[in-house]
Length: 198
Length: 66
Image (tube, rainbow over all chains, first blue to last red; front, side, top):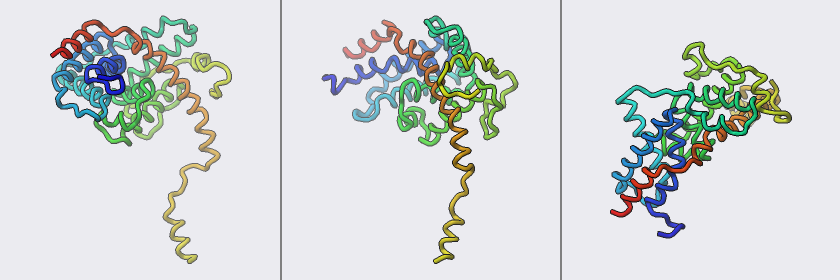
């Protein structure tokens, strides 16, 4: 099979890094994410005859992983490990203030509704289009856009210490324990000249 | 003719905010989004760059041979 026309299995290998990111965004736990990717791969191999060549392989594969996640959720309670999401990046050469801001972001991410967190990560980290995101998550394009928008605004409300907007951001109603990082920390993370007025 | 214009004007949605106000409100949000995008890449790019576990590759390659 040529590089211009990769085989089913080649496409599967190519998409593995993105599946691992999606799985971590969904589960928030490294170990659970690895298990989820493996389960999704097994499911996809079993169902490979149902994939229609020429259609969007990424959307098909992300959807299988998502369905498997939902299926697992029904079987057991969701696993939560807040420290897992940012752990790898906290050991990089980022400055102390950057690391603190990243840790705040990682913690805030875990508090987002799952579908918002997944949508935000797939669009921002993977550069996925709203159309493919909608296919992968089985929703309308408008819903996909709305999830990303609400995720951004909720994180902004939490991380900038603003009151959540009243227009139905469900997560803001889940108690008073939302993160309230110091504004100095985020100001430092933005650095000079970024145009943020705090 | 004038009457039709009035009716059309009535159908137009009233802008929620004046243009100037909206511009001012968008600026800090855009700055936050820039920071958020950068932060998300810092959080997740390392995961995407990690070597793929051999187990996963073996599962796929075994199926490839069938």
